[in-house]
Length: 143
Image (cartoon, rainbow, N blue to C red):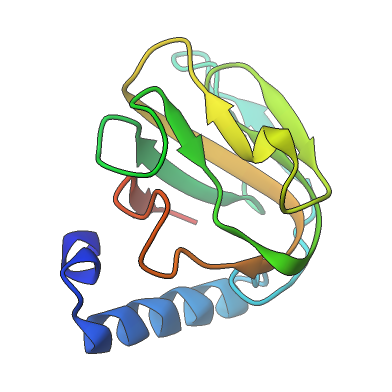
């Protein structure tokens, strides 16, 4: 579906944004427009060392897909007029606390290219790829 977004299919883009907004609203994690997510019921998966939270915004990214960053990086699509106070668990054992759209930590460099699952907890008001950035790198939204 994301590849269709890149090809300029305006209706698909609108449906995709509407579906994500609905899912985030329904789950109480309005990330696309704004909201707050609490850290609760966290556990560590022994096989992957990923910290899991039932209240996290969870997404999987492939750094080797085309995008505006290098093939070992991802960049969160934050908007300049947004409100931010959240923590990102990048899936490689590192965390960042984000409070500004232009903060250096919005772009993350991994030790090697590949697929990573990230967990976001906190307040995000302003999230949009807008036909640019690393839209092709996000491959799944699972929560």
